[in-house]
Image (cartoon, rainbow, N blue to C red; front, side, top):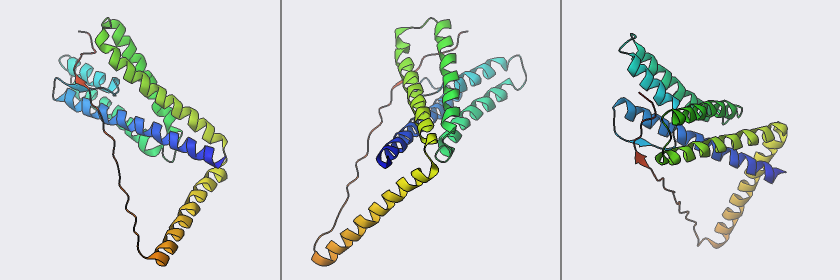
Length: 204
C-alpha cells in the first residue's frame, strides 16, 4: 500500500506542475495582450485574456471598464496560482482549479463556434484538452488519497525518510572503511518547447 500511496502522491505532483505551467503561460499571454504583441503561447487559459479584451472594448462606452477587465483577468490568473501553491497541503484546491478550467474550456468552445473554427485552432484545442485531462486526473487522485487515513500517508513519508537515513549511514561506513571513493551526482534538466503564433478568439 505504501508504494501505491507514493505513486499517487507523485502523480498528484505532476498534475500540480501542469497547473503551474498553464498559470505561467496564461500570465505571459496576458502581458503580451496588454502590450498588444502579435504573439501568444499555447498551454494557457482563455477567460483572463477575454475579460481584458472585453474591458478594453467597453472602455469607450463605460468608464473604468478597462480597469475592471484588467482586475478580473488578474484575479483569475491569481486564482490559478493560488490553487497550485496551496494544493500542496490542501489537495481539494485541485477541484477548484479543475472547475475554473472546465469553465474556461466551455467559453473557449463557444468562441470557436462563434468564429467558425479553422484547422489552425486544433493545436489550441489539443492543449486545452490535455490540461483538462491532467486536472481531472488530479481530482481522481485527490479522491483516492482522501479515502486513505492521514496516518497511512504519514507512515509512507516516514518510511522514505528512514530509508534515506539508512542509505546515508551505509555510505558513511563504506567511506570510513575504504576512504578512497566519493560520489558525484549529475543533474539533467528537461527542455520546454514553445509554440508561437497569434489568432484572435473574439468576434467583432
